[in-house]
Image (cartoon, helix red, strand yellow):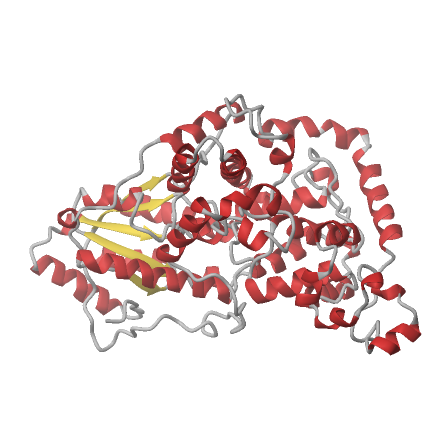
Length: 541
């Protein structure tokens, strides 16, 4: 049976609700569980609490308004659909399903409530983009106006209406240490189901119907909890031994990194279960596996940082579209260069490491943290592009797009937070350090396979007679650099540092530190090095 239902008629919901009553369900007992970025049954607080109070209607809304946003892409949509199919395969063992309806959430809730009153709405808290934030505000208003209680449950170690950053670390630790909600037992769930009627379209909307381009990375990771658990198992038992020392190079990172980021972003796995599973595996390893243990410890620290960055967006939703430090307003905004941006998107900047990363991202939906940082650095400094436009493009490219981490890191790498060290990555040095034989750039840029090793990092310097001999033409097969890297980077840093040195800009720093700065952690972990604490990716890896 196809698990998707497109509800386009009010009478369908009315008929459904009347059938519930006729089957003996009390009108005021209906509990709606609204699935969002929590596509699992295990450690699902909303489902656990709803199941204890009455018959449950599990709902996932495909919201056209959200999919129309410039940070949405078809790969996100397809990953979610795959995750929903996997979730429904598991839920079918309980005799139920998640009903996937297309429409704005307040409209769908109003249709349900008009026919049979909803006793309560249950969902996890979401820290998403501004559109989902405004959507949640609209849902809260609708619930108040209609006397529906909305129960929201913690998804990550993030605090709503956080007043004091000093309290945050203890909250995260408490959340990570709390026992997980168990997967419900077979006799604990009573499902309310939608009737299968002729007027119901049983297919999800096409990408075109939602305004999404068909294109998506052909080699991206598949959605679903089963895939996520398999990735978690392979990482904890095997691949995590490569974590320390393996996550920086794009050659080793695809296997050394956990690759759990999309499964956390869409809630196929819970943050808490990953933290606890990692701790158990660390304890199980023998004493002589010191390097492996340190890798898992470093990974656990990144789970902490994951929530730290999401907390920034939770505390200040505006950082998605405006500078954290308002003193940097106007720094790059007037100088947007369409030619530079188009070349970056096309993988034609002329710097092989940058262009290879763009191609890999286009093909897989993923690159490792250091290469993400390098991409943003090149965009922000030598190309002098504002982080917002670049960030929207990268949001669509990253399968694991997590708004809280993404926008915090876009600003940090672009130097507009006012509290972080300027981070400038030289793409030539990154190639020398992390791809010295050119295996990475030659894999993703076929034209580079013709370039001799001597000219690998700066092919534009190759003499014309050698270009002819090797059958590669710089400016045609390989792009010429858009700018002189050294001169453009120096000029960009001078502009940024001149602004940063202004007294009024320096004076505003303290308030930002108070609101967003991470307080000194006092833990028993002595294995975390200074390098660990600074190796932060644009997304969790």
